[in-house]
Image (tube, rainbow, N blue to C red; front, side, top):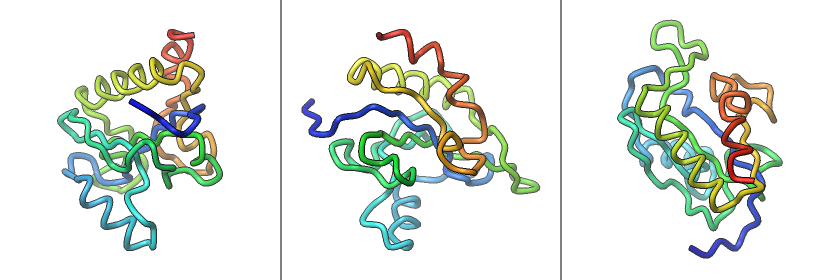
Length: 144
């Protein structure tokens, strides 16, 4: 695995889709291209069943967090919005929670100095609808 970018941040996102709604990389790619982007903004998308799917190649700068894209990897789980009132909600399934931990641990082995953040650490948004920095703080120190 040859990475040409220096990665110092792993940024967790949600897709801001209603709880339980199956959403694919292709769906998100279409939404992002409709916004005028060259491709899907996220590098990794985790489906409701916990399966991990590649979005944008991690060798290529993402489009997931304004002013933080150059040296980061964007990881999104499908969900993040309540299906009834469409308000932000931590909708992660148990499978998604495990897959997020697995992916963050994997990327920490590749980029031991990368810090883990939520999108909301850089923008006035609810995304990823939970405190990623706090939840994953032990992963941040595990590999140093």
